[in-house]
Image (tube, rainbow, N blue to C red; front, side, top):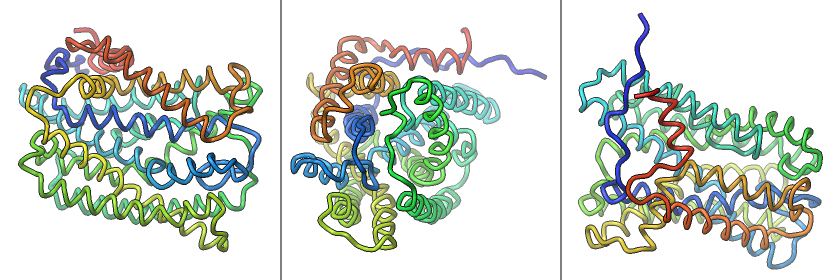
Length: 390
């Protein structure tokens, strides 16, 4: 027997009534996403493990070093954790409205399937390093963990960490043995670029799924059950420990690869690949630490008075799907050889400057249009496709 599409339990929630910490985290992490992606549009240089030019200027190498240490591999796990956190919130709302778990599971899987489709279209038209497909794949495969006991969730997270190291070590070996060419984002032929984007996306999506995203997603489920981001004051001690320990692990674990990729240290291939895997696995701790730091900051704010800057950043987080896709539109327009063409004329430092400007543009756009609970175009489309017509 077919099941009619479920209507959403609630209409769009006004920004002032949403939980601030997740939206603020997404808004700020979109800056890290922009910084991590912009240099992938550059061409004409031999690159290291994280895609930065090995022959850049001193400023380029400084920027690359800072980003390897604090940005790359840190934002993706945080978004995965927030994705798991958000699915638990969605599940709780649906169950509280009287839906059965099989009905809710159907909604979650439908939403994940459409998210996977969004990722495919993103890769087809704009950017091979899409992360939406990985999140959609996680939602399809791991939705059952939302209802499993904590012990099962944490065991799966630990298993995911082990798998993460294995996958990234293999990927690192492939990186040192493969020829270093331009990424699909920097190819001059639009047709060739499209084909290579889809090939790259088809390989990177399961890699993201099996590596960075799964452990963080499961930790996000665990945190959502305790409503940690809804009550940062009540969980201040836990958040402080995660912030300090996670940041320390991320910096210490990222330092060896930073030294390798900016050519200060030239170890053997095996040591370099180990540094690459260490950088990636400690990035999960860094992503969780960033979420904890933002939650602690929210806990110190006066209730109901976040201020215009925080409100704008949270609006960007509320529009995170739209703003994420807009970043790629801007980068293609600015960097692609068949568009603005700056990808062949600037270095990593300039690309990061352009990334900051692009992110600020999306923050301003969301701040102007989001008040009153208005959803971004991509969010509205995903909602309509998930629930159907009301």
